[in-house]
Image (cartoon, rainbow, N blue to C red; front, top):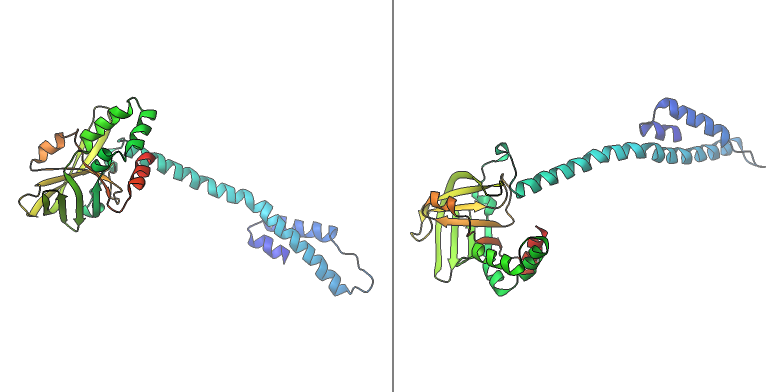
Length: 259
């Protein structure tokens, strides 16, 4: 039984037979008074089998470790690549078209959270790791997040904009994407959709930016909207930002602190 276990574990037959021979000799059981020959052989093989199990663990462990190491390295490499893309460093060949379904769902604006003080911990965190004060960061994000559209719903090709003035909706179709280069040298991709039907008050174009450059379900996004496609691409200071409507204030804060 011990020999078969060793062979099935992938240990060479030469080593298996050597182990079996050596330990069959060393572990040979002395016959006790009244012990039959059959019982003595059974007891010896049990002890050999126990050793075989230990040998399997000892000899197989290095192979398992070697198999695991490349996986860990690959995971770290993928994480580093994702982080680079998030920060705006990527190759054109990495960019792919995306469908409106990537932003499907019910979304809430974070502007009210900023103005109500819920995002103060985020501003403080940025100040501790950045070059501005918490007040400076708050002013920067107040300009960036500012919007009167406090909720957006996206279902299929329909996008609805909710504000205190009411709700307007439109159906939107893919209109490609644009690559933008920023002052720091990093880049971003705007995914553009044009209105093909709907309310007159709904914008003619919407542009998504969420730090991703290929199909993936968005966790949050910045949205630009208006009736002039080219002019929207020039907008870099106001980027209304939306998170899933079912997230609490504390959950949104945790998400922001993670980035």
